[in-house]
Image (cartoon, rainbow, N blue to C red):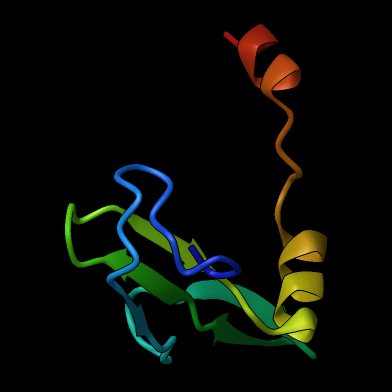
Length: 80
């Protein structure tokens, strides 16, 4: 929805953008020894309720990449 403005679930073009803020929906990251958070913007289909979430700052994405284990479905399936 972020790039097309079209809901992938129902095809509607009635999409709202909810800006990311420093709140409980943010992702905790490390910044120079201090904990901070990466705001998460949400795109909401106003027809069916489908939601997509994005961290939009390249700097925040880099901090998340360094802080958290990268996900691969194959590796997760092998973990008991």
